[in-house]
Image (cartoon, rainbow, N blue to C red):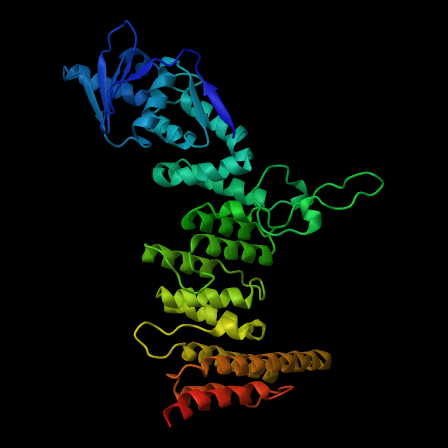
Length: 442
């Protein structure tokens, strides 16, 4: 982690309990500054030499014959103010990714400008941010996380936007140019683990995976994550499938139960916001995310009662890729209070959309004979897969004794005209349905 030391004098700030800070010198303090719940016993002169705001506040105390100043809106609170105060005294302070934004916002609040004194705190922090922090991958992520509690100051000072751009720019570069450390715990190819064979006794350079940045961005809260991904999209240097991989990794990390379709978490609204945002960030390109992931996203959207518009868009995406799904992907649990085990209505809507899309695609294919043949071939292949998918799904759903016959038949009829290499699965589904739902009651 990058850091910057300022000042040369020993730190003489002392603590008396939790709420009192004072400078341990022979010279008596002559001003009390209350920052939040903490009292600072300080000297006027060092503060006057660096802070325009304190000059004005101290001048007002002299007029009022008062030696106390109250500051209740200091960005960063007492800790950030203490950094600024120590800088005024010339005492050693260490800035790093965790405290630099708070110090920058506090310095702005205190008006520690170059017009007050050359080499003032704002200037030094800006140099540190530009020359060190924003050049570091992990420091930029840490800094961006700290900006959240300092809004609107961190936004108005453009720390957030500079940080977002720094992260997005680094994530978008050619992986072969990545020279910094990053977190990557997922399965890699042998060549990506540095285990490649040596040729002529020389070890090849370790390959950096295209999605090297994905796990580190999972540390960001959803609103900051959204800003970074959106900025990366505008740069148009990142492939859609890698963006999709990032969204999947974020959902798995941040939404407990996502993979099983049973979202867990104390903050219902927060989980809903995450699902809505991930859905909004989906790349427009087909196959940028798997159908299985889209179905998990749809399950989460239903469970969290997300917006209907977003849910419809996810369903349209699924219909485009339904031939990639498995029957287990479609086993949506019914809403609470319903007797049926599985939500067959959602599956019916997805299959219906698939049928409509493929019908429209075939009707609209004309002109280029080769293209028309390819379209029909692809459509036929997809229909075979979806027919098998629905047959297998019905065999699973038929085990539910609460499944209405009408819904079973309606779904089966949607793909009744689709080609199949074999009808074994639909016969098995019908047999199971009869055994569970009819013979059981005889």
